[in-house]
Every structure is written in structure tokens, then in C-alpha cells.
Image 1 (tube, rainbow, N blue to C red):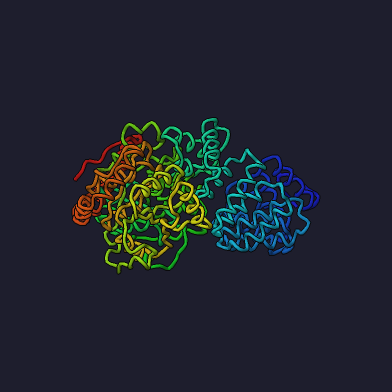
Image 2: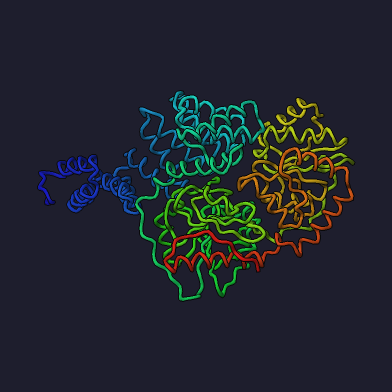
Amino acid sequence: MSTARHFASPAEALGYALTLHQNGRHAECGAVCRAILAVQPDHHGASFLLGVTAFALGRAEESQRCLALTIALKPDLADACFNLALLLRRRGRLAEAAALQARAVRLAPGLADAGPVIALGAMLRESGRPTASRAVLRRAAALAPDDAEAWRESGHALRDAGEPGAAATAYGRAYRLDPGRTESLGDQLHAALSHCDWAGYDDLCREMLAVIDSGRGIALPLLTLMIDTGPARQDRAARHFHRAVVQPLALPQAAVPAAPPPGGGRLTVAYLSADFHEHATAYLAAELFELHDRNRFRVVACSYGPDDGSPMRRRLKAAFDAFHDIRGCDAEAVRALFAAEGVHILVDLKGYTRHVRFDLLARRLAPVQVAYLGYPGTLGGDGVDYVIGDRFVTPPEHQPHYRERLAILPHSYQVNDRRRPLDAPVPDRAACGLPPDGFVFCAFNAPFKITPSLFGLWMRVLARVPGSVLWLQQPGGDGADNLRREAARRGVDPGRLVFAPHRPQAGHLARYRLADLFLDSFPYTGHTTVSDALWMGLPVVTRMGDTFASRVAAGLLNAAGLPETVTASFDGYEALAVRLAGDPATLAGYRRRLDAGRATAPLFDSPRFTRHLESAYRTMWDRHAAGLPPESFTVPPL
């Protein structure tokens, strides 16, 4: 055979190619492998090494073809199955990846470590098979009881299976085995909060704050919003997370295609999310996509979440000019799609929330990139140019704590859907487990937003309002028992806690009609839940803090025309809740104001909100087209 060098045989050439690969000379290695295959097309060793080399060079399509060819030539080559499974996992083809990984594990029964088995468990979980995942990960933990990753993945599987208590235990063991993997600490805290187990809350919070302050590890950004942190700490945690987790996925980085429209022409805006289905984000934003001015904007959806076949999914697909399901597309394929669509502005609706694709956050997919709605804080990197806020959640003086520039909307940053169900039949109190009379405090925010100090405040309110009950969202696992126990510890009859199971949106909203006053969470205040309460005419008491997440409800109340129920401290919050419980006339007045506000309040004026948001997009694009860097700005009200 003939190549740049002369080899006596394909085997000798392959040995040389392997040396090149091991020394990082991947392009040269690939050239030798192609020369071997030109002479001997069925050489599985050359096709395998070419697949691995192409992967190292970021050539996903070529890598996938070569690895698939290798498996066809040599079906019992476990390494080829392992590598192709890894590639398919990264491309979002999770079911295929899990099947290949399972095949590889069967082909290599004498594995020296539990890594491949752990990876199989993770792939099964990601493909929606938590029961199978748990079984595989039990095997991994038995193979390597001191492997922190086996326990962390076990925690993920238990979390997804609805067992937050067992998940917290697994995360705790993972952290003890490898304290350097501080992500496990955040996972443990979130799992504990999800079932309202506060036994180690103070210690976990102190340790997380120490991680942020020292920079010795990763603090999961979303978790930093749930504990006592300020804007500077949240920024520090997000910047470290971006450097450690997101930024490494940025290479290889292709140039962003130029996509200038004619002066004043239509802008193409692409919305990127995993939540285009029955989800809180969709409940808020569905009408926005329908209301965009098609003479000035073309709107595209790129969805990497599940297609649940729901009415909301069908509504969203009809709302966009183009709807792309990008599950199974890697970052370069998505970049090519954006180029083909001529996208000018990318709007990411996820941020650092569950199911986010970090490979997409790491890339420059459009000339202008914007963070909106899904994550209340900074992402800590340079890839996103702007974050959409308002004068409450992102006042100008907070700019030093954001890598993004602030685009400040009038009234509220949060869009709302006027087609939210309003007239579903109201259930009777008995059907909801409520007593026939007595004041009903409602706190339907996610259980992980409840902190011990907040719960203590609620219990003091119950103690001061005889005959009242607190109506809560049903927590996961044994969370209800934990909360009843905490109530008893604080001298409150546990029977005064009532739990609301999950219901479809219309039935859930109808339940708000039975409540008398909504008690908000803190420091992660209500977002969709507070808008839901206000839409249904239920007054909300909140406390305003100094971070985006702790100021959302305050902004919503101002935009709904009810600023009187915003407080600045827990003492003020408690006093107001107790006073309103004894003042039915004031509460009735608030209800009338909210009912009238559905037609007039800025919070629910979706057409006006859409024009404000479009004005922000046009300002962003005009700066870009003029060759100017992103800069903070405030959108003037219409």
C-alpha cells in the first residue's frame, strides 16, 4: 500500500496511525486510516480508529458513519459500541445510545471498572427509563461501592423516579466519597428541599456558601437562587460554573453566518427551549409567539424537549412560522439549521434549569443571543449578549452582577397568556380536603422553594389566625409527613396543613377560587404560580429581596396593580398576612381590583408586552448591525 510513508502491511500502517492518535496528531492519523481503507475497505481497525479520530476533531457525522461501519464489520467489538453510544448520547439520540451501551456491556462482561455500567444507567435515565436505570446503577454500586459517580447517578435515577429522600442519601454518599465533586452537594440540597427534609439544611447551606466564596468547586447556579445569597455571590457561582461546565463545550466553534436583513426588514427570531409542551414556560409564553407582528418578525421554534402530544404542544406548533424538533441534532447541526433559517436573534428560554443543553449555550448560534424567562439570573458567560428584565428584577444598578447586558422592559419582564383557563368548575372545599369554613392561606409554589425560616413564619401566621389552614402543593416522597412533623414541632396542629395533588392546568387554576390569600415563597419567589394567582383574582403577599429570583413576585404585583402587598422584611410579611386575614373588606377590594385588571393591568396586556419586547429586539439588532457592542438599555413604554 502507498501513503505519505511506506508500510509493509495495513497492520503496520494502523500501528503508526495509533501512535499519531495517541500523540494528538489526529488529522494525520485520519489520513493514514483513510489510506488503509482505500486499500482494504473492510478493515475494521482502521474504520474504528478513524471514527475515534473524527470524534476528537469534532466531525460528528463522519465519526458516526465510521463507528457504525466498524460495528457492521465486527459486531462483537465492544469499544466501537461504547464510542458510538457516547456519540449518539451527545447528539440526543438517547434510546439508541442506551441500546448500544447495553450491548457493549454484555460484550465486555469482565469490565475493570464500573464506568461503562454507570454510563448505561445514565443513558437509560435520560431516555425516560428510571426503573431500568435504577437496576443498572445498583449493579454499578455493587461493582464499585466507593465510586462517587455511581452514587451520584443513582441519586439522579432516584430523583427522576420520585424518591427524593433516597436521592438525597445517594448524593450525600457521593459527596463524602469525592468532596471535590461539589455538584453532589447542590444535588443533595435540592433533593432534601424537594421533600422538605431540613435536618441538615443549615450545614448544607454553609458548605455551599463556602464553595462559592472559595471557588474550590462548582455550585449549581439554580441552587444558589434558593438559599441566602446576594447578586454578587450568584454572579460568582455562575461565572465559575460557566468556565468549568459550559465553556469547554464551545470548541470547535464555527463562525456565525452573516444574516443581515434589509434596513427595517423582517427579523428572524428563534426561540430555543425544552419546554414547548405542558410546562410553566409554555403556559406563560404561548400567546407571545402568536402575537408577534409578522410584518416585522418571523418566529421560529427549536425544541429539544419531549413531544407530549398535548393541546399545548399543538397550539405552540401552530403559533410559529417554523417549528423544528431538534432532538437528536448535535450543536453543529443546530448551528447549520440556524444558518439555513437566517436567524438574527436567538432567545434561550431555559438558562441553567433542568434539561438545558449546555452544548447549545456554549455556541454562538446567532449574531445576537438573548436570555429570557426560564432562568432568573445571570449565566455568567460571554455567549449571551442580553438578559430580558424589568425595573424590579434587573434594576440598572444590578448591571455589575451580570455578564449579559440588561434589556429593561417597562412594567414586567414576564409575559402572560390571556387564554389561560378561567372558567373551569370550582371544586367544593371538601373535595380538596379543606374544612367547610375558616380562612385558607394558599402556598402553591414548588416545595423546594420552602425554607425552614419561611415555614416557621407561616406557622406563626396560622397560630395568630384561629381556624385557618395552609394549602400547599403536594411534595414528593414523604414530604407531606416531614411538613406535618415540622408543624407539630412549632406547636401547630399538623391537620391544619392541606396538600393539593397535581392537576391539569384548568382544574388547578380553578382551585385558586377557594383560597383567601396566597403566601409567596422566599428567596425564590413565585413566577408562574404568582401570575396564576393574580389571574384568578387571588391577592398575594410577598417579600422583595435583592436578587432577580427574590424580586419577581414584587414586579408582578406592581404590574397587576397591587403594590400594597409587597413587603420588605419577614416581619412586615407576617404582619400583613395576619392583618389581611382579619380584614375581609380590604381583601374583597383587592379581589375586585385584580378581576378588573385582567382587562387593563399591564401584567395581562399581552399585545402591549409583545410590542415592548419587539422594540427590545429591534434595539439589539440595530446596535449589532451598526457594529456596536451590546449595551444596556431601557425600553420606553408605549
